[in-house]
Length: 483
Image (cartoon, rainbow, N blue to C red):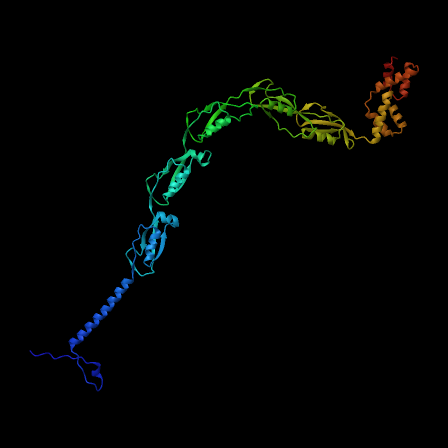
């Protein structure tokens, strides 16, 4: 067998002009190529191993508190980012009642240092504690300590705090104790009064009974307001309902009936309202006027009791109401100005004026008369005349003086006053103002004439007519002296 010709490899020198060619055997070329490939593979493997050595493996943080999960990532050079439910967003609550559930990238993944890893934080499952028979505050504290939220529902008495807190406890909870819930879940608790035994309240005063009932969370109720007891007297409970020993919820009431004696109604008819109220109150009754009592200025009309609903001398329960009506006693208004009279009557009368012919007017009379008792707002008619001038007042006084010592006819008295210097108007005013019986004046004049001279009947009548008496007055005077 003949040998194959040897292959040769030309080097760069072979191609160079003027150089001699060197041939490399083929097996040497293969060895060189293998060596080069091995060196390259070693480099690649080395680089890969170095890269793998530089990566961090994401740790498994499931079940760890948020702070511990974050610390585990930070220790590996990673950045922790929380993705938490609302209830786990509060730091204090989250640390105690929340945990890491998963990460992104997931546990076991290799990542470069500095990469952000998101931690999902969720509530832990907690067990509902038993809170029945606790007071509201203690139950809320127990639920909070377990990582749960209390939602309080309460009976009216417990919600308004009309009874002491010690008499209200948790009667029901939902969910029941022992159930597993996510931390931060709500537990509804119902607050209700406890059952208590009714104590003995009979033979006690109102204050003592109230204190004894209050000690067990009960309240007293009365059929009516207790009247004020006379000095040195105490009303005692004679009946109670429910009876002592009964079971009631705290906050309920116990009806109390007191042993209150009868009292005798005093006579108040005809008394002033103020005196009647004083008499009724002093006898142990509650005065009850059927109309409102107006404010009366000092010196104003008196209010007088006109009817009473209960006869004087009747026996009624102490503290009972006694109704009465009142009227107004007409005051003495003669001599006052109309303005003063109306002010004195206030709103108690409906005034009407007669004889108004000047200003200011003076009251000469009124109807009804002073002292009459009438209903409020009754009509009161004032008869008036103008207020006198100084000259008129003097003329009235002079007329009165003349009439005090001798008889005068109307015209004769007017002439006499004119003789004294008064005007005819003032003289006439004065004669009309004096209260005179002219027949009686004719009789006085007749006696005066007979005292110093003799007269026949006709002569005396003519003399009296001459003095200004009318024919009828003169005849009356003659008759009065026996002629």
